[in-house]
Length: 125
Image (tube, rainbow, N blue to C red):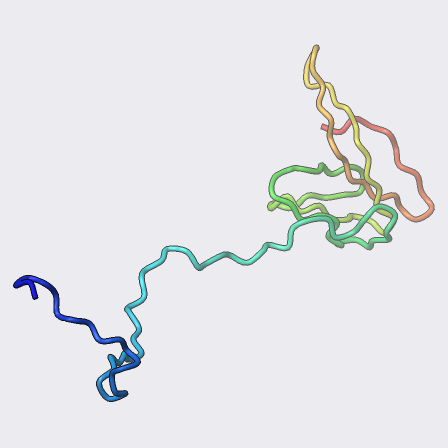
């Protein structure tokens, strides 16, 4: 045999069960993550749809910012919530408003048509 040759390796099937290598169940320490949290939803959106009946104080839309604008018989809260001022049916419409001489913007306006009444057409700012 050569002086620096490795010792002969015995196959595992030839070693008795008491001499076989044994591994124990181990668990390494868990790492640190900066994920794993989320804030709950804020339940925004349309609460009463077009044609639905509302009474005074009913919330029609919860929103962040003025995505939709109040029309007739609709109030706006400090958090931009649109709510009904009278009993009637909800109406949605898109209107064009002139900002200045050469430019207009499209706005979605929410109104409440009173029971047995009609809306008056007027400019919404």
